[in-house]
Each structure stands twice: as C-alpha cells, then as structure tokens.
Image (cartoon, rainbow, N blue to C red; front, side):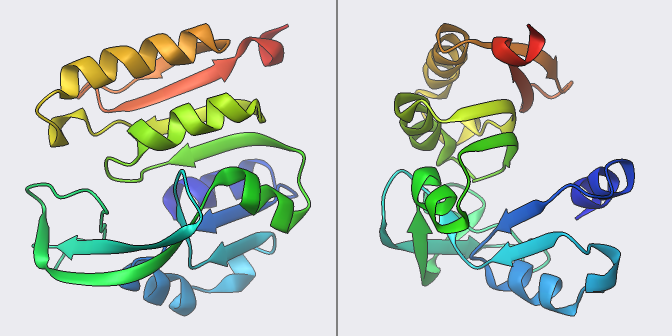
Length: 177
C-alpha cells in the first residue's frame, strides 16, 4: 500500500485499481482506512494470462503475504487455495478502460507468461513496474533475457532497475514522444 499511498498523495485524483487474491492482502485492505484513498478500488482477483480459477500456493513463512501459482522455495505446496484469475484485457473491459497509465505487477513468477500475453494484445500501457522472479526457475536467466528483449521490441525502455536486479520500471516510447 505504500506505493499506492505515495501515488495518491502526489496525484490526488488518480484512480488506483488493485488486484490480489491472497487472503492476507484481502484482510489487510478490508481493514485499511478507505478515507485515505478516495479513488482506490480493490478486487480479489489475480492477474494471469487466462480466465480461470487456479491453485495458489500460500507462503511457507506465516509472516509473508504473497502466494503464487508457481511452485518455488517460498511457498508451501501443501497449503493452497483456489483463486480466480483474469487477464488484463478482461479487467479493463470490466472497468470500461481503454488504456492504462501505470501497471505495477508483483505476481510471483507469473509475470513471465503474463507480460508476453499483455504485449501480444497491444494494450496501451504508458509505464510498467514489475518485479521479475527469474530466481524461481532453473532457466531464469534466459527468461529474464527474453522478457527484457521482448519489452524493448515492444517499444518499452527500461528507465530504472533495483540494485537487486529484481524490480524493473519501463516506459513506453509513445509516452516519451
């Protein structure tokens, strides 16, 4: 919520839409003071490359929030729930949107299938902030290389990367023009 809060403080009239199917995130948002974010809407869906329910593995560490549909070292494959997933185009249609100014994703490994699907649709997105979890995969370095190449070939320029090389910010060249 810190990113959303900072965004709302800097741009008080911006509309923020958040999607997260994990139980801890849902409980956190339900308990949050909504008056702080007059233009904040939360939905209990996950972002995916398909329209379906899927198994979500919950974190091994009970203090953590993030679940994942990707089996990785941080999740407990014996502790899972079923969650509704949607692709970005469906969510935009549901909200009557034709473009996205800023898309922020931390989807625990699913970004390697979601980003190509989004790029294939040609949805107009000005800026994309994404955490890339290549460490979850044996071929993670190759996945990272391919997604960075794909972003560039789709008109996005990397403008920021974290010291850990996990969080990336891209801006579309149409925004720069």
